[in-house]
Length: 283
Image (cartoon, rainbow, N blue to C red; front, top):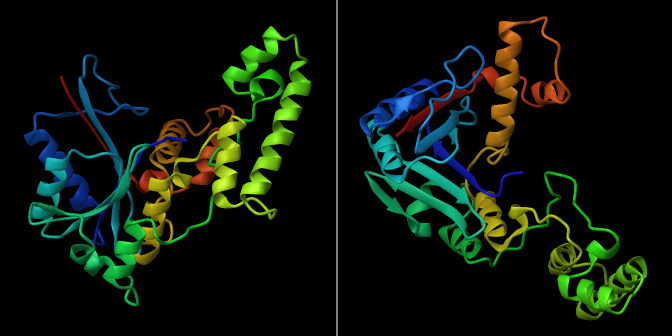
């Protein structure tokens, strides 16, 4: 699971003009197209900067661009197509939504009001951006990684246990028991709250889903009041790239034996070839 996410949403019903305009704008910026997929020329050596995105088939009145696009290209994209562009992003540091219109980037809720669900208000969006709307913790996109034995302890306790010749398994179990009691006292004796679950995950070495971070929660809360498709954040860029790779390979050689995981990738996104890759780089 990637810890960064970028998507553009354009109120259009045809993906082809979006891909064509992106290609034209990137060429104007000195980028050159390349095709790293089966049948293509591969990735040219020596590229310092790369733009690797997919333009998704239109859905519910939106065309989505999966991947990170340079800010100046986003501004020019909307201007050339004559539509506003809604930019969503999430990184380990921050996340949010911005509206790019007429070459100007707006982040204030009032400017994004046109993209709201009809029964929602700019104040709801403001509250979402401020983290005042609760959203549930979601499961990780990958199985949690839980450390066992000595690795379950924080580094300081690992060193102390080794110095004192303490059985690592017993120490880990005791730490889990102590931390569980601590969480129950903090939470008033009930089940794990969202905060407790996140704290437990961090203390026990469990992989944190970026969508459960504070920034991720705010992005999800904002998306709930924006008039976006239900699958506004899925499929991921990584999933589309993997599925597109296998579908292209199978298209060129239908009898090719699939590698482990290829079948699942194809089944996850059966229409992967309807996504338009826009791959550019410059030295």
